[in-house]
Image 1 (spheres, rainbow, N blue to C red):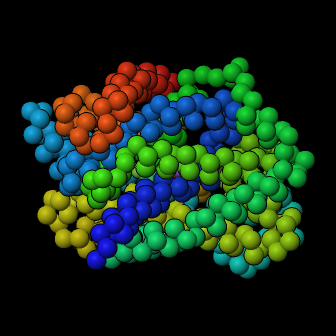
Image 2 (image 1 turned 60 degrees about the horizontal axis):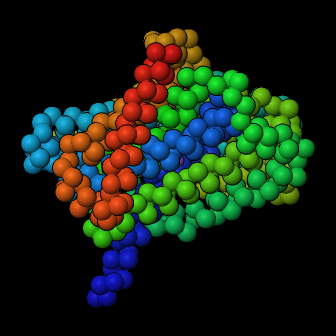
Image 3 (image 1 turned 180 degrees about the vertical axis):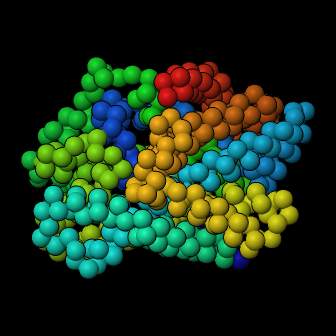
Length: 448
Ligand code: PFF
Ligand code: NA
């Protein structure tokens, strides 16, 4: 067998898995709506800054721990801690990560269900010749239909957990290797279309000319949370993948490549969506429905609109699917690590996520006024607290572990980036990423 080819194959497979985890609803659905609610350009600038100063170094730390431990996150953390004279209680960081992905997957699956609904609607040509008002109204009617939301959530969770149970996610990633460039191309076409609309100038100004007048601790806090969320960092989910990363692969290069791609996809989506928002006089802070009401409007104006729209939602679902698998796998791994059978673990995770997801789905109708905490309903809680608080907290602990607990020699070897690269990375973690996360997290939590 050709050994070089083999290794190349697994390096490539690792990048594919990372990209699959990173690129998803976070880029195309969440980025535009959170940016919209947080004033646009200042948020974008902060978010890109956080990706560079926190996201990339912490992502490297997270994967490094997985690669050094070569086991499930809980076991890797425990054995690395023990080997270096630290408390094996570090394993609970893995458990905390499992709790985080549990909460995230519960709302992620509901929103992915919206994409299923929109895929079906566009196959049926339901958006043909519809006015922006009619599209907005039909989205609201859909949200108010609990049965339909629960059905689509169940369907999406089912296809996700089936892939996890069957262990065929590699095949899906390979499929996405071919199909994701089509999604990027489609976003490019949409952004190009946006450039021809009357809303384009305002979009550029709004996305790229920061006004710091409206800047407060909350905007900074949301930008940090989104940086972690979009890169899939802070929940030990990438740590689980790191266990399979080839020894000789460059961690630095992989992290940068994935982060840059992730930002580009978000930018394209942002340009496409805000052009429609401004051209149609819609509200940028419309909330979670933003992508779902703007894109059908855009496609309705293009020739063969429904066909493009079907393609778009199909590709979005594929991107979402690989992210959801990455969210589910650490939980399943945690349970199998406790000695459970894989089938039972998958079923238990599916059931738990399904139940909480149903509460999230009903937050748009029956349970809209059930606000257990901070005046937020279940959907609002799940879609804000885990990304904004849990991921940065997990990321902080991961960074502390990699920068302070792992001895220099061990970490340097695990990073494999040469002495200068190692020093720069560790100094960034110690003196930038860690203090920055602490400050923003405290400021944000106090402002909750
Ligand atoms: N990064 C994914 C997205 O942008 O859609 C979401 C995500 C995946 C968050 C995995 C966290 C995670 F562990
Ligand atoms: Na992302």
